Image (cartoon, rainbow, N blue to C red; front, side):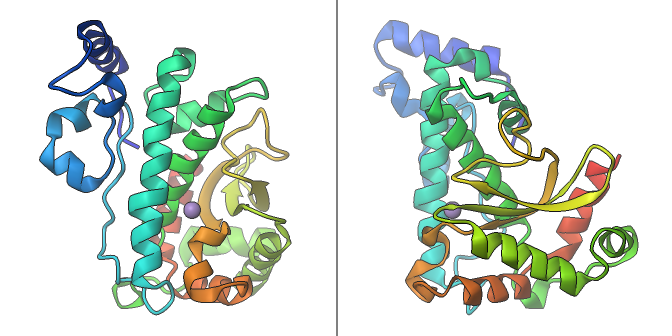
Length: 256
Ligand code: MN
């Protein structure tokens, strides 16, 4: 999510390529593979266009809703792979190497390389997902309030109805994908679902475009270790660890 000076970054990558290596690494190895690697090798982390954001909580903080092992693998393996593969894919698709992940997603069209589309979505989607979750004991707002609550009532009638529509969108997503609450161009809330790692920022490829403020990962890797095929139980647990004040922050930013 961090803005990067891509000209500087690409200069480093090109220099690395020209020299046949950079501090003993091939250019493709300059991408950060994990938070740990970022600490061990800050130069490598700096050279990467996008980096894996650190979690704001321990791997076991979301338990029992989402168990420690699932969070650890999901963040340090799956999300890290999206970041690494995105950086690699952007080396061969420089026109999409834009300074923010939001800009990359917005630029995706049906002719874009699948590796960029899937991994840019993967990075953006998971960055949002981690930020809107928290241990219930640390959640200030357990339910939406203020302008967000009014917008939910206006669009859905009630918070319960919103949760029902999100659950339905997540349950009816065949295979892997996401369920979303987003703000449309008229600043109105809507629920949608996208396949794979697509998201509503990808206005040229999704049915309905908007700015996501809440995303639910319904890939099996998000819940299978703990819930196996019980996707609905995972969704119920998800709402118990939802950090509504963060959703509210995203809402406020989206309607500006
Ligand atoms: Mn995931």
